[in-house]
Length: 314
Ligand SMILES: *[C@@H]1O[C@H](CO)[C@@H](O)[C@H](O)[C@H]1NC(C)=O
Image 1: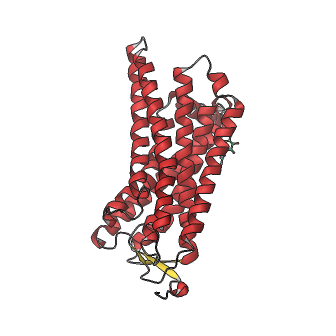
Image 2: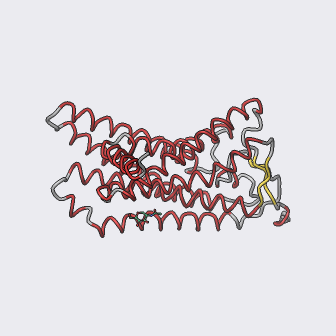
């Protein structure tokens, strides 16, 4: 039997994009701007929805939770990634690496379920407007919300505590932008077959099932839209649906390719790009496509702005 020294790795090195150092500076600038815009956009949504009573309905309360998740998800990934981009090689302690893995899974998982719950909410509102108050009553709403957070929490806890038990005997260079499970798993010097089966099953349940449900509800919504009498209403509803679907597909599609088979044959560079799509693009775009394009949200923003200006006359 091969002897493995479990304590031989005390820290990992995150390589980031160090194989293309000529781009690092530009990437740092771009990602810094993306991070700040993500924080700002989501913060606006959280504040506007908490202050505006008329937005205290399930659709916006889901959105507010989604913004909290987006901010937390970015905060788990971006600051460390910016540090990685501003140096050639960055070390990350064993504990921090697994803490990052935990938070990525926790918030990423919660995001998966929240997006699913939001699609169900829109489906009920558009396809069954008369029974909507009953389909999405306060109890159902709270249950969906609590389930999303609880399942995200469980995913993070189970998966991280499994991966952390693997022996890591070196090398310790993670060729990725963060300590995501598939990248860390490459370094485990143990048979990870059982874990891969679990990851496959888990991904099917956590990513594919919500994604299929979302697709089905949007298909039903599209049919409902096609039956609308006014052409402008139809066009507007259609463009809203199309933008939701695009972002949802981008998020679930790339997360799926990454997590379904953790040791899949994609090159590390492809995996980095896919990771950027769900960890950087989704939190950036969500506020834009779900709320800032939305007329009720715009009205609430203007109203709060006026109130603020009125209360501080110059
Ligand atoms: C999510 O929304 C619910 C209902 O509005 C709220 O009570 C809860 O605090 C929100 N959770 C977070 C983390 O913002």
